[in-house]
Image 1 (tube, rainbow, N blue to C red):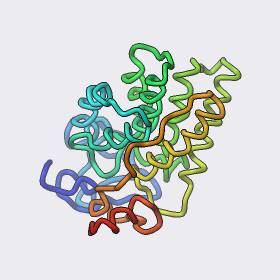
Image 2 (cartoon, helix red, strand yellow; image 1 turned 120 degrees about the vertical axis):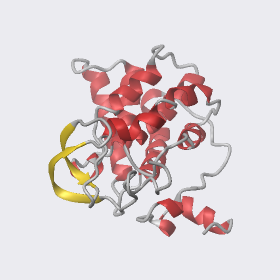
Image 3 (cartoon, rainbow, N blue to C red; image 1 turned 180 degrees about the vertical axis):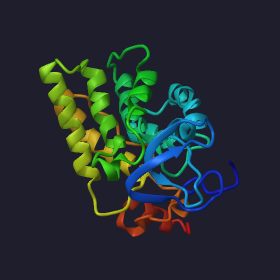
Image 4 (cartoon, rainbow, N blue to C red; image 1 turned 30 degrees about the horizontal axis):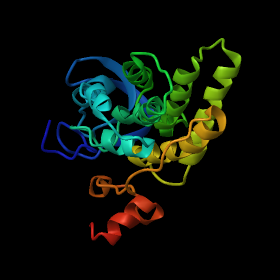
Length: 240
């Protein structure tokens, strides 16, 4: 599985194909059959659970080790998760987790298992939803973070509505004209979260310690490059 760029097929390294309609496929690792519009032109397929298995096992531990005070800094630590692919459902929980970790450090009381619960909820949404359902789950995780703080359920009117507005705020930020980039979506979601948490929850975060510099430009064949500040800062520092 190693040795190929993680944004391509993890078995043979070919660029993945994103079809308009799904077809029945079988996971080459666990044998699970499901319908998917994403696959390898050579016929290989890895389900979301197997795709995320290696990195997600380490995510709770990494989240607990994070000492950053600002959600942007927490996010950059989570993005350095070992074995994290360029794209994929492994990213889904990270924006919400970053906001929750920073909220806890301001004194917000959260459920004891909020890290595991945030990951569990985020992994219920399949990869590719940003294009196929119009809702990047990196952005949806901000609504999940607000839900965690407010205790929202399907029958809690005000809290449920606030979680919806949180997701809407993040989705508006992520609804650009570029091809998907999980890491860009996470950064834009956390930026949207700063204003939303201050206005709706009276949670004010400190400024990040360092400016964000993307280290994954060479891994992303659809990178928007100069359209976003993460690339411009890298370019000034001589990154190619």
